[in-house]
Amino acid sequence: PRSIWKHGKLHIIHENLLSRTKYLENNKKVRKNWTTSWAVLTESHLSFFKDQKCLNAQNIKSELEVDLHYSRIEANSDKSSRKNVFQITCYPLGLELLCQTPNPTDSLDWCVRIQKVIESLPQP
Ligand code: I3P
Image (tube, rainbow, N blue to C red):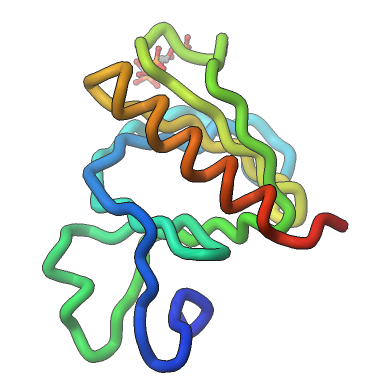
């Protein structure tokens, strides 16, 4: 998707494996389906790719892309029995995403970085 490119280059702030599931879609609760894929944080988006190799492709295609302009992050979530879960709410999509890492430090690291991106963007 074009939106994660800047001056023809993908400006990656952070990337790593990240587990995720949708919790709400179009403001409706959906059945959880946890998947682990390659997550990429840029200056405006959090995008998920099947694997790291996908980023080398000509027509780079993400599985899911969250516009952080209209998003909020919470470092904890009571919506899962799993550990190290944080939650991203994206208003235009009516989307709530739960994200998880095996390690608490990595989870907090994602949160801090994503929060910084959100704060750097103009808020509606
Ligand atoms: C769900 C699945 C999820 C689990 C969820 C279950 O069952 O086990 O992993 O969420 O718990 O309902 P199913 O596969 O039948 O959809 P967590 O792993 O986040 O706990 P929940 O009902 O408490 O949301």
